Figure 1 (cartoon, rainbow over the protein chains, first blue to last red):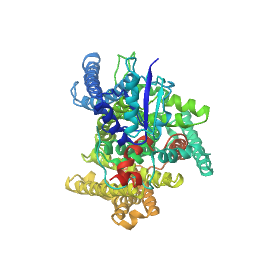
Figure 2 (figure 1 turned 135 degrees about the vertical axis):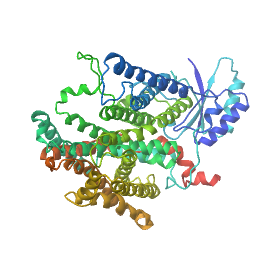
Figure 3 (figure 1 turned 30 degrees about the vertical axis):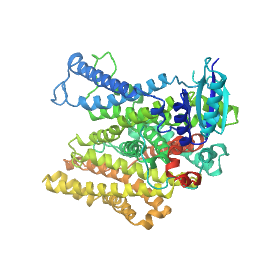
Length: 175
Length: 458
């Protein structure tokens, strides 16, 4: 079982400074939990996401497959003239445009749910439930190599940086 | 990432984060007040009347409507366009303001998006019942069939409509739902009722709110915003092409797509204003949806109203300048004057003239006046669609085929029914869902509040 050292803060700016302080002292901050996105935390934790690239690929797939379908139905499968317009017409663009958005949106959100491992009815336990209300939390993993001195040092750094409470928790919230 | 500063105070009353959670969730924890039950009763009654009209249409046929050979589109298409227009506000609000980084959207976007979804659902019913044989509704989709296979006419704006509106409904619903997930998690962690914990736990999809989760959440929101913003423009452009690709005088104009999009945003913002004034009044959200928020919407409305007025004048000018006698007849003899002049001048008054009162600061600050004007906007936009549809169809090229149109009780009941459906949806939203995006409001709280502990540091 993995144990975490958890520092509870009441303010997002105090938390940001605390993250800086911990990192300056060589402590690896595993995670931060908050009731709303804190600006500046993603850079500090080196978090990036490739979702924009994924969305672009879905969109490109949408455009191409919709065009292929329209071309195949209107030119290959059952060529039927409407109003003297060419079989392969410019009005395909409208359907392609809209369905590109459809495909892009749909798959982006499927990706989001899959990457976040979220699904309806998933049960989770939060180490500090108030993080969905007004508390901000820094999570540091307690590893086996850590000596008591290390742990005390982390506690001290958290306390100095403004934590209102420091707890140890073995709630495995991010499964 | 995605951060910008804001001007002024968006949330009044020196609130802490926990105050915000508490205040927004309070109406959900309290017992439903009397007005809610009365409104729900009335809305359900209206809905049932609509179901009767629906049943009548399906079992007897489209003959129960007041349509005839000439006026082949009546209230159904008018109401369809009206509802779709109202349905534009949510996404326009959320997404345009997200893209242009307007933080005041946070207090209003949730309600505007809810409105969008119910309005689009109400709108979607009209093309469905207009088919008459609703069980053949699958024909509107291109599917593998034994007649060739024979495919849809992909050149037809009616088919584009099907695609655009399904996409719009899907994208708005997903955007709305994903935005609510963190708030459902807040309810999950706060509630003491086992039942609520289970329901909102299931709805929250196991949201934990860690840094990576928020990064993906924000990225997904901005990506969808970027994709759906052109959708707002395209959906109503496509709706306008249902009309403008035909050769009917009064419809066959190139101004239609922008004119419809602006009209949709106008009616949508009008409805947002109506609803938000009610919401902040009954739930005492005046600190979160401040007078400043309403002021911002009225400023947008006065500007959009000017564009509407310009569009109406442009139509008249082009009817004359084109030298086309049919166009001139439709606009001058059948709209500005003639049988339908009441509808035309109602449209002009409600859309282009009355909202101009918002130039006056005193009126913008008077919430009762703002509410009344927002109702006028809603009415005016309904008449706009009435004018477009009925006047053009009733008198076209051949005077021998001219016909008048009056709606029957079945058509009226279906319209009232969709209002009931919309209201019931909005009432359910008021009752069971956090009506303001808690996590988003918290995100802008600090930089826009007058809270002591925050301002002292500065």
